[in-house]
View 1: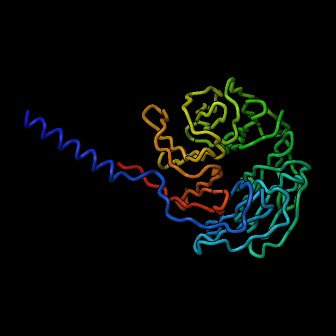
View 2: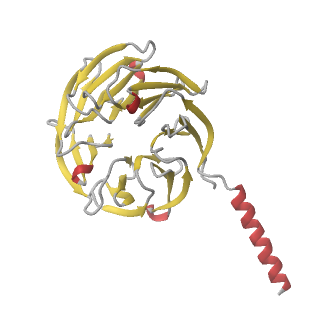
View 3: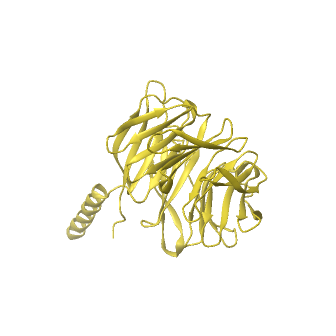
Length: 333
């Protein structure tokens, strides 16, 4: 009995030490104040070459440029109308800002920050995805549709109408198809961008609604969605549209990212958590860490090339807005 007790104590001690030494998947390494930002914060993008992060401060009607090396806001300028989407285009050294208020997509010079041109989508310009291969910017807008923009000429080259306002969407380069969240319809629309662009399938989520964020594992043919009512993390097959799994998630999810190297999913939720889902054997995903953040902090950006995860925290009471920077920890082998 004495020997067994010693073994149990040793094992417990080893497990305790392992728990203490285990690193969280995301480790907070820096907090950068956003002193002039009030109201809701929407999407972000980064210029990794110059280490600048661009924030669409919707409630502030401003674009915030954060110098990640300096750890401070290096430029804050207005002249926008409820900026929602933002994308940096390296080959043009340009910033694209989609405005929800007037429906314009504005092209800003990435060096001088001067206004270059705009494309008018008339209403509620929102999410942006830039495809470097085709040099096309895709923008969700209105009630709804996805527009393909030629930024060089400043024109719309194609449009795909939808049954409701589009939220997050992902482009499958191999098939030239796009998967689009249409939360008002509780569905995913599948667009084929081959001439003419059209919706070729709709996948209904049945009792799940509030499907705002989306990420994709293109090679694994998996689509990742977080819903708000009920709060679930959903994995779908991109060939069939079938739901592979559905796991409980924190509330008010707004952004979701797939970490291909670590085989993880990060979901930022306004409830005040980043939920981390880890892939297991057989392609299953299980809920792991819930990283405590702040209520309302639901907008994020994962940048694999920097191995960092950024979370925007809006102003709350006397607490100013801030950008939290997390280091992504590798999977222990």
